[in-house]
Structure formats: structure tokens, C-alpha cells
Image 1 (tube, rainbow, N blue to C red):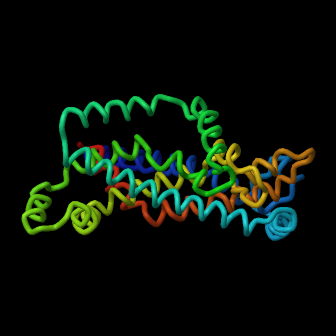
Image 2 (image 1 turned 120 degrees about the vertical axis):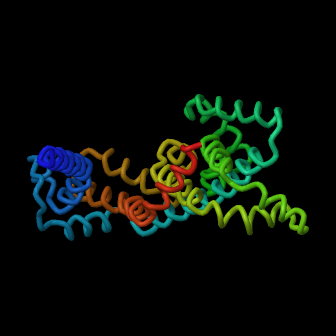
Image 3 (image 1 turned 30 degrees about the vertical axis):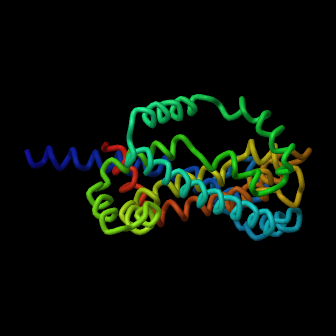
Length: 272
């Protein structure tokens, strides 16, 4: 019986190692391709090479990587902070101040998740052009400030929030905004971490709306730069994969460093 259990455990660990290798292989291939010249990448060589710094030099000499990376990071961070703040307040309000009207409004918000962004992109662009928000950070992040998914996520997480604390704070004379900042925010920190990771990745990888709203080279983001590297007559795959590696690193670092809080925050919402 003990040998059978040991055999099952070995099989389980082998399966887990195999799955890890499958999911880690794309990132390994990015690193390997970034260190090889285009010829080796086209041949299908998956082993690391010695051409990494040459690819980085080619990339930096052909594209303003510093400015583009700063644009992406600035837009992503600002969009994430504003979106998390607005959506967490909305989710808190939907759960703490519940009535039938708010439940109906929540249902409408959830239905809005079924509408593809491409269907509202043209009206948004026309409205933003009329109010002079083209090529601006506000115009880039404003459509995503209020996310139905994030509002629902915070609302579900707030179900487990002890409302007795809110009542006690009100009795002590605290205002609603102070209750939100000083009580709700610290207790719900794992939920904020999970929401921040999801929002950061979504904003960082955004391509369609930046392509429409950012029409100047000075406002270009990393996703647009990658598309530009592919769009030429000849593609330097070494420089392209070096750019892909730079583009991927921020999301990988954030997820790895905040993985535990992400899992806790997701479980805190889903278990409801």
C-alpha cells in the first residue's frame, strides 16, 4: 500500500514538473531568441546564443526605447491606480449600501461585460476628439477607469468584510470616506493586490485603444513599438525578441513578487 502511494506521488510530481516546463518554455524561448541573430531564430534554434547585447544595441539605435518604456509605465501605473480606486469604491458601495435598485444596476454592469470594446471604440474616439483628448494620457486611461469586472470583483470580496466594524466606526463619528480609507483599504489589501496585478497586466498589454488614441510618435507605447518592429519589409527577429523580453519583464516581476497576495485576493473573492 505504501509503495502504491509513493508511486502515485512520483507520478503526480512528474506531471506537475511537466506542466511547469510546458508553461515556462515560451519565456525560455523568448530569452533564447533574444540572444540569437535573426538567421538562427529563423532556423528554429532554441538554444541560447551570444548575440544578446548586439540585439539590444540594434534595438536602442533604431527605436527610442527609454521614452516608449516610460510612456507605457506611466500610463499603466496611472490607469491602474485610478481604476483600482474608483472600482473599489463602487464595489464597496454596492455591497455596504445594498438595495434592489443597486442590485439591478449591478446586473446591468455585468451585462455590459458582454459588449465587445471594438463596438464602442468609434463613438469613444469621436467623443474624445471633440473634447481634445487625442494623444493624451487622460484619453488613454479614461475608458478603462470604470471596469465592470473590477467592480464585481470588489463587491464579491466585500461580502466577507465585517460590516460591524463600519457600524462601530459610524457610531464613533468617522465619515464614510475615512472608513473606506482607514478601515476597508487595509483589511482588503490582498484583494487590492490581486486587482492591481490583473489591471496592470491588462493596461500594459493594451494595444487596440492606444493604436487609435495615440497618433504621435512621442506618445507611443511598448505594444505599438512591437507592432512597428513587425510591420517593416524586413524584420530583425533578434531585436524584436529583445523588445519582447523587455516588454514581458515588468508583468513577470510583478506577478512573481505579488503571487501570494494575488492567490489570497482571488480566493477571497471566488469563495463567496
